[in-house]
Image 1 (cartoon, rainbow, N blue to C red):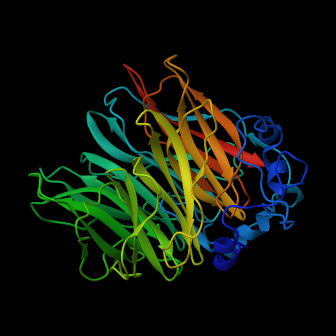
Image 2: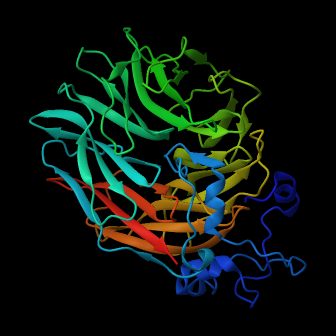
Image 3: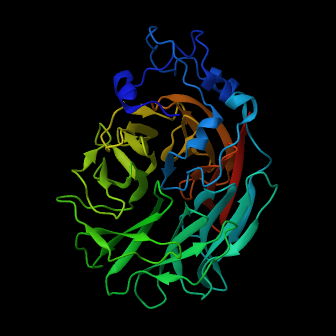
Length: 451
């Protein structure tokens, strides 16, 4: 189980002993030699010696269902099964990364997303085939060697910004449809294997512009949707929210989230307590707005990062007791770093801001998901001007402190979408991303197993 918020606030980021001075942490075993390799000049300052309570990455804690992310990183409906040796052991990439699709028609950078329901990962992306961009998915059972492609939009309407989240008994997908000459939000209920259950639902119908939807599975298994709405003429956008039922239809009228003096863009959405939370980055600051389960504002907005240097959209791994917020920063306006901070159930920050990337590699726009009693974050790094890059993951403790990292895959280009990450009940981690060059946009996925 995650540590109570009161303990996390009192402890700040201090964990057991010093990682490199000999105190044996269970998190060290998770990443094997990778963690030890970081114990030189790049390590964090020595930790206080008066703590002797180990923060264990115990896979059994996945069974509490208490955390879920905007990237679908919740544990789904099934009870978790322990990772080998109770969560201890090495983490490794399981097999070669899988190529999901090549798009030679549209080479623009597009969002790729992933969620897990039960024991099945579902990856979604927009793909131009036959000259029209549709929404596709890849359903991949956690323990299976391969999965199955699924078409989510079947009317050959141009789509963009495809999102996915788990729900009770399956998944819910959302995307923006431009077939009518306007930008409208559509949703669709999917079964446990990712196949559509019923038709796509048109959520909006107006002359305004809808963009960047976000979905979150709430603690009770229902789904809340959010999206950005603007007049398309430069006016200040607002966020609209609405609960969705099991058929992905709206429950009641949408709620408008107009935060005074704030301009929410590219929102992230996650369950928080018995409600939800909306996060976004604006002018270098990451904000978090607590919401009810129906999507209404409950209290004042919170500032998450401590410096005005945030870059890109944030990511959430939240649940009934609080959770973590991951975000990218630009240090000195140049160097990219991936950072995170923990928050309490109320949405108030209760941990220190910590760095998930380690020199000499930069990394930005991380995606985060709960992993056992802590977190796992995926991010992309550049390879020093070689024209290639790397997808990496970083582990963090329940307090948000860096606990080691692992290289997932090399990419043939530094251009592409920020990666996304989800964790299955058996502890497997799926990382998905898009990379693009002068001819092709390629969508890939890789699994990591610990134990």
